[in-house]
Image 1 (cartoon, rainbow, N blue to C red):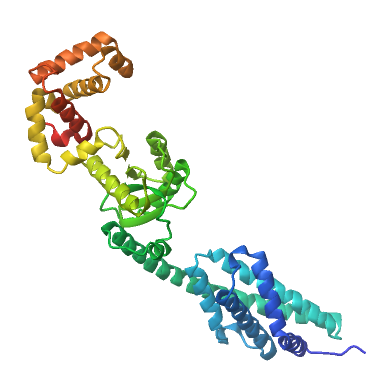
Image 2 (image 1 turned 60 degrees about the vertical axis):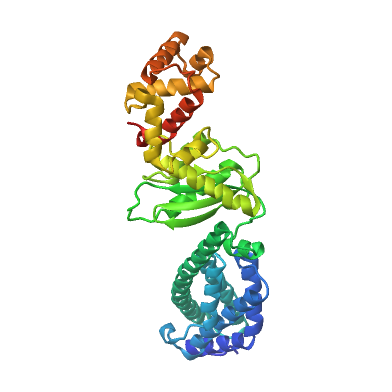
Length: 420
């Protein structure tokens, strides 16, 4: 004859039966979760902690069912909180944690349904009991999920802040030449140092911006890394709200296409659109420092030039290295340029065209034909401009040509800051 149970008694019996095999249930649930959710794969202490978290939650649910305790009066398992913290520290997305609770709930309900089938009770009794188990389980999962998510997010923020500080400090040591343990440095900054690097500085003009630009810089760096063919995540170190340093693991022969990178920056979000200054590819720990130093010098020149139409600069561009040297004392450089170029150093559109034409003329081995082709102009127009440039100089361009070309290069890179 079928036994008659009250709903509470039936639920208590099923919960007690499940509790008798809680170790087996917890192991099976851990296996399912680690198989279904790849982010939860692990070994050692983290795997043991997953088991402890599962066991604590199952214990709470069964305790609530057996003794008719509302979830607000239950103490969250400490292992569940600690597991959430560990996942946050390992960078496991919070979605994996939430999914684990949903799949855990599904597994426990499957076991409860099976246990109800083993109890000799009327169908309507089972239905009522199952309804009670489902309701309590859903309430508990909703309750505990909110709590572990809060713990996860708090730990993630703390962990990222500490890691960012540690990474920045270790990078500073590398750049200062005081870091000697390369393996330890790599572990802290999460970036390999025994490879070729391309250093960069990313920044926006709004130094007083109210929003942190790190997410935009990180997105831009990711797009640049893809363009460079880098197989590793770039190292991005924020310096303040409006600037960051970056390193890309690249081939030694990589040649960034500055025009392509310029188009990629617009896709990083904005305004403001980030500006980027690159060093040149350099290898190893010393190369990590050198390419960064070059990127910083390129940024300094770009900042002095202040030309929003040229947001991407490379230290490898012709003339920039010399311009970076002349940028150290702008007053002295301005006086020297004026002495060398005379009226050709005037800051207006007419003399800018003459300077540009004369510089191209020098760069094309003083060939009128080659210069005309480069400028898409008639050769006679180039000759006229060169003659006009000589008039502004007050002498032939063959007189002290090296100084004239150097001054023109400085004007090209440093712009109005060295013109008169």
